[in-house]
Structure formats: C-alpha cells, structure tokens
Amino acid sequence: MTPHSSTRRDRFVTLTGPVMTVKTDFGYVRSPMASGEVVGDRLVPTPIEVDLPGADGQPALFMRIEVIEGVPRCTEVTVRSTDGGREVRSKDLRAILEEGLDSWVEVFVSLCSAEITERTGEHLAAVHRSGEEAVRKGMRTIRDVRKGSRRPMTGERRQRVADVYNAQESGGIEAVEAAFAVSRSTAVRYIRAARDAGLIESRKS
Image 1 (cartoon, rainbow, N blue to C red):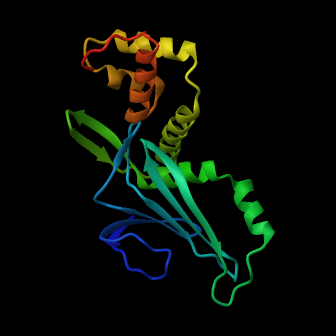
Image 2 (cartoon, rainbow, N blue to C red):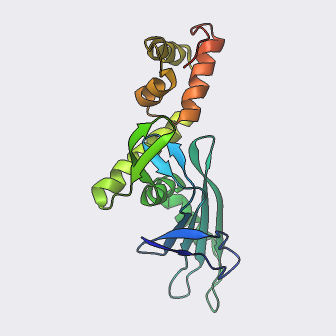
Image 3 (tube, one colour):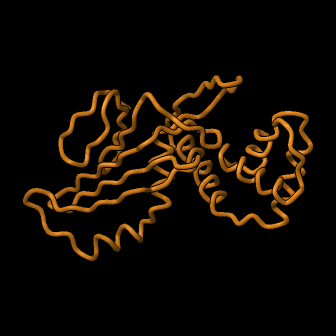
C-alpha cells in the first residue's frame, strides 16, 4: 500500500488529494486516505477506484465502488480498448459476469478498508491488516453487509430486531448492528421497520 497524490493520467482517474494505492496481480486499487464510512466492523474509504490496465493488448477495465447508505456498491464498470490493443468483444463482458461483480466488490473493499479495533463515542480506531486471512475476514464482513441490505423485512425478522433492541437499556442500534452483522444505516432501517410495526416503543437508542 503506497500513499501518494493522485494524478489524472487518463479520464478514468478521478481521485484527488492524498490517495492510498494497493497493487494487485492485475492492476491497482485506489482510495482516498481522508474519508471513510463504517461498514460492519470495517472503516471503508469511499469512493474506491479499480484500475486494471490490461496486458498484451487486452482491454482495460475501470470499476468504481461507493458506500451508499452504509453499503459498498458497484456504481460503474467501464471496459475500453487500450492504445494499439484489440477491440472490446462479447467475451470480455462474459468474463466479467463469470468472475462475478459481487466477489470483486468484496475483494477490493477488503483490500482498501481497515478493521475497527476501538469505538469510543464518535472516536474510531482502525488498523489496516495484510495477509490472506485478513482479506478473507474483510470479505466476509462486506459480504454479510451486502446480503443484509437485500434481505426482506419479514415479520420474523422485525420481531428479532425488536427483541435485540428492547433488551438494551441503551445502545440499541449498536446491538442490532452486532446481532445482524449489518452497517449502522441498515440497523437503523431495521429498527424503523420494527417500530413501524408497533414492536418497539420510541426511546433514545
């Protein structure tokens, strides 16, 4: 991981200011050093830009990931031919689908994010960890958060949320975050749904 100031080498590099760059086997993943959103037990920079320049005339790929409502989401994928390289073909798009954008989001976010080690009020302490196990752990967190954002709010889930929340004298939001392995914004959405169903009485969390 190498901090540096971004330069606009081409039209796909949009980050400015201090940037953290992670080199991968196929290219680079860049993210701002001065911003981050809490996602589960991770501090995730936003946006994240993935630059896979291609090799031997193969098309290049650009990907943009942003944290939206507490969930890392892919907001752009661009495939383009390189100078002197071949045209973009159907097989290039098939390859992206076969690899799976969900897996890419999990990997790239895990590489750029930091594990939160301490929370005291508004203060957060987080550390970047390297190694395969650290990356896999980060991927599991991101996967759970993304899946949680797509889960329907069934009556059973609303009741479980209410049970977790009501069991706390304070810190109900944090308890729901931990119990369901979701981001704070998703926990708030869950609590709102349970409250709208009359399962939670209004009080400070």
